[in-house]
Length: 152
Image (cartoon, rainbow, N blue to C red; front, top):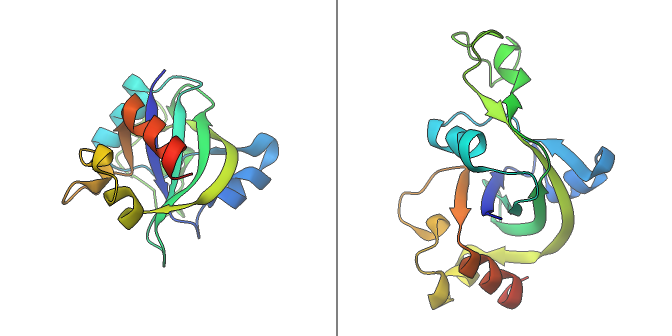
């Protein structure tokens, strides 16, 4: 089993939105970074743990727990000319962008960046590294357990 931190802007999909969705499951659309796409394509497995992170908001942080709920499949927004995630170079025969479904497990109290930084055990966590902008990052089992135990 692997663990991931997945960022979502709460005005697009929040942990509350995910919990309210059918089967508490949402497609993780709009990923347009090759490294993040490759994590979904090559490394994620159904059942992997997810730290559901609210980003680009007044108070960013881990807002809930979720799990990977599907194998990767083409992100339909890449084909929709009306979508901000449209990619004219992508075709149904050769899609460039994939997604996985994410199932919300529960909302947690918010674990903010300052709270994460306050834990020396989390010093190497990708989200805390300078310049990290990836929407999906791996989380070690040790980091996962520390966050679950101490922050959520």
